[in-house]
Structures are given as C-alpha cells and as structure tokens.
Length: 144
Image (cartoon, rainbow, N blue to C red; front, side):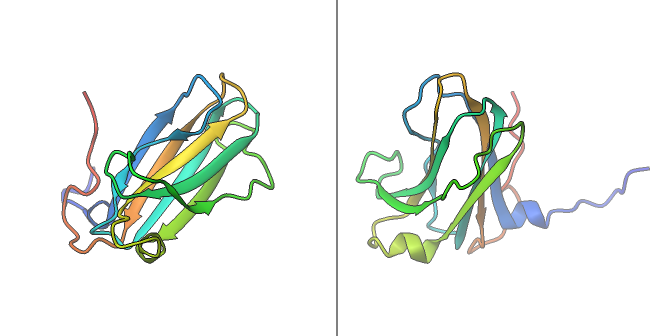
C-alpha cells in the first residue's frame, strides 16, 4: 500500500528539468535559458543516449532571458574522458555569485552542448537549487 501523505521536500527546494538533445548538427546549442534571480546554485548534466563522438559542454551566462544578449562563459567541462556510452554523464555547476561576477545584469544561464556528428544525441538536465522561497511547483510534471 502506498503512503498517503504527500512529500514535497526535494521538488519544492529545487527546480529540476530535463531536455532532449537531438541537434542534427555539430554546432554548439544553447539548451534553454533559465532565470537565476531567485536561486543560489545551478547544475547541469549531459547524458549520452546515441553516439560516441566528442562533446563540448559549458555553462553560459547572459543578460537576456532568450540569450540574445552577450554570452559569457561561466564554466567549461574539461572533457578528459568522453561520455561515449549509453547514459554516461558529465556534470557542471556554478553559483549565482559566479554569474553575478560578470555584472549585475547577468541573471540567465544555459548549458551549451556540441557533439562531433549530427547523429549524436543525449539528454540535458538542469537543477536550480537554493531558492529564496521554497514552494510547491518549483519542479512540476510536464505532460501533454
């Protein structure tokens, strides 16, 4: 029998989201711009689903919510070992303070990923943590 009480500890203290990564090309792709205004930390992961080629992986900052401003590179992953098998993962993390060190107007971040061949694919996950206001719904179901 399932427990009847509702648990909302991790999901109300973190904004977690997954993105399909199927670029059909080799140029770097900004995955999704998210707002860090009310969060202290950001982490992202690239997990391989198809392919074995080289990967570049970085966290970018920007002043515009759609990434149309000037990008700054906050962190890059030194790819010593390539994630070249199914669900091998590489992670990056930055803080809101590191983002703000580029200027007070920098509040948006995105993972940026490129792969070696147009057939390579993966999943990119985001975790924004340390919210100013923990609340239900920071992480929500996404279904259609």
